[in-house]
Image (cartoon, rainbow, N blue to C red; front, top):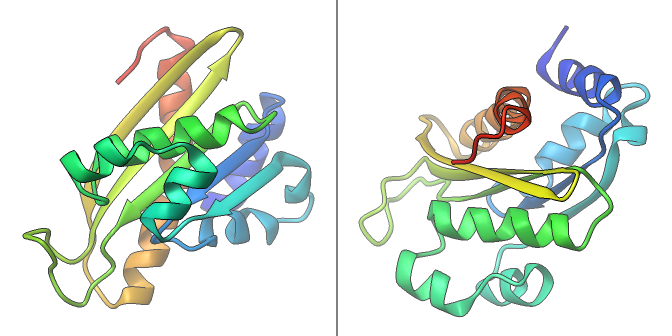
Length: 166
């Protein structure tokens, strides 16, 4: 079973729907899930938010967070995931923001992607974030990032069920 099909299976098994807040992956997470037969039943919504203004307007990312930590930061990814989940009936949100390349920018190496996974379990919100670096062309990095976001969704959901945050 491939990663997207495995994610759909897991979401169905746990009766969860997903929303995404994607910058650098530009909707690829939702695309991968939608390509799985029956995957649409697990997708609530997806935001593609490239500009800082869109992140602020649509997801409630604070200008302070962007100015303080940069667009490519776990802090921005966390606020993106929280904002998508707040505006959704989904139980899980996945967010990506980063630098596909080919050039480094503001001291951030090309291929650096920040992720956040947010889970609504009852009245509890658990959010996890991580920074990773991928190598290859823009297209390669984008696909690797989308697959990584899906691959880690189950891991962090299990941690959220155990009451962890991070």
